[in-house]
Image (cartoon, helix red, strand yellow):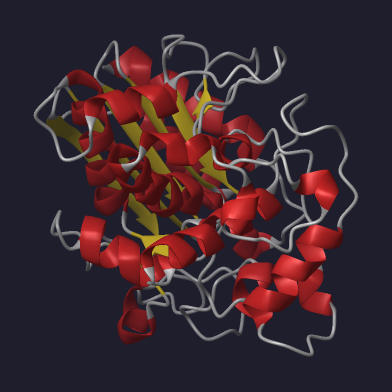
Length: 347
C-alpha cells in the first residue's frame, strides 16, 4: 500500500470541518490496490468507525454500477436493443416520446426533465406504474436525440425496461448476473436491511438502509437512478472489471459493448456523456486536473464518486455521506477535484 499523505490530510481536514461523518477513499493502479483509507464514523454512534465493510448510499453511482452493467449484458446479447424505440416495451407511450430509445436515455439526450418530486404525489396504483405514467405525461424539453439534460427520469425508464426484458426486477437481475458472478453480493446491494450495522447514515434519526433519494424510496428502494448501497472496495472492483473489459477481449463484460458505452454519445456537441458514464471532457470535471481525456466516471448526490483513467489504469473511489450534514451543503463539489488531483500527484 502507498501512503497518500496529501489526500489523507484533505480527508481528515474535511472530516474535522464536518463536511461528512463518514468517508472512504480507495485507489487502484495497474490492477493493484495501492491505498485504502477510512475516515470518521457511521453517523449518530461515535463508537461505529468506518471500515472496509462500511456500506455507503451510492446515489447516482447506481447508474454506472447497477443499471449500466445490466445494459452491458442486454446489449451484448442483442446490440440493436439500444436503438429500438420505447414502443417495443411501452406500446402506450405518447407520440411525442415514440422516437425515444435506450441509447438516448443512457446518454441523457431524451428530452425528459431532469427530476420531478413524484414522491410528494398521491399514488393510486403501483409506484412503478405511477412513475411510468407521470414520466410519459411530462412535456419534453427538446426533441429526443437533439440535446442534453441529465435526467433521473430516463434511468427510471431504463430500470423498467430491464424488468420487462428479463422478467426480473433490476435488483435481482444485477445481483444474480453481475454481483454474485463477481463475488460482490455482500459489497454491492439494494435494500441492505440485513446489514444495518454497516451502513453510513445519510439522514439523522432514520433507520439505516433507507435510500436517501425519496423517489427511489417511493419505488421501494430499487430504481435505475438511485438505491444501490456499496463498499468502497465493491465499487472499485466493479470499476476494475469495467477497465479490464475495455482493454481485453477475455473479460467479464464484452469488450466491444463496454467500449461503445464509454465513448461520447455525440447526440449533443456540448455533452460530455457516454452511455451511462460521464467523461472527462468538461473543464470543471470532478476528477480534477490530471486525469486523462479518456477517463470515465460519475458522481452521486450523497457525496460519492468513481473515476477510471484507462491510460494510467488508475481507479479512484471516493465515498462519503455528505448529505448527513444537510443536503444544501455542497462543499463536496470543490472538494472532489482536490482529492483526485492529490491522488494523481502522489501516485
